[in-house]
Image (tube, rainbow over all chains, first blue to last red; front, side, top):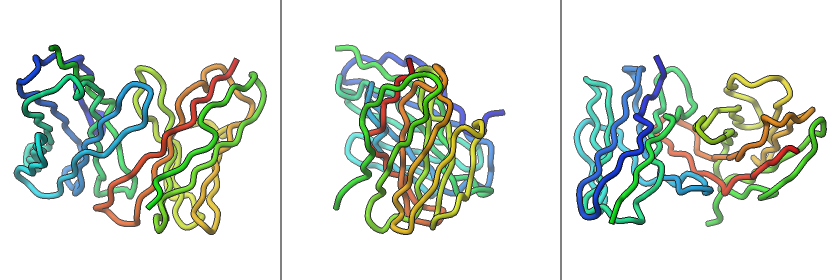
Length: 111
Length: 113
């Protein structure tokens, strides 16, 4: 079992709709969770972090964390073509001080 | 506040050569991690340095090595380059501790021919 798993996609969403990206993790004691956006040929950019169960909203982005089910999700409301990118889920597990990344989900917003 | 700086941005090397990449973290950050990213492979963790000590290491051969200096700047070295080493090498810096996000540099695009 991979430590952090994401569906590789591509996930195709019409412009203006809600894009939902999911991530599961294996270490139940993980405390810190991050979402990064990576445009093709560019480096990852941190867009959200969440530490507590529940929802955290920032503009059009909402991160959701459910520690009991060991999943974290990212919702993008009113999706724009500029949201087309690969989204990386990252977790700091309880057992290590390093950040572990999922392989990413490629999101495509179609006009 | 300056971000993470990686140099050089692009590099072309020949098989068998060695290469050194540099990373200057955000001021005050003491942790530097290195990643290799190839198409379809995602981010592969190479190693992490904290206060000049390697704290974590990924599953890469010994040809990949690194170090960190007292000013937290880090270098990564790859010896005896192979074609498969062609990749985007990313450096990320962060503070110490659990709830600390990582910030990436622009990366070094290495092409081995």
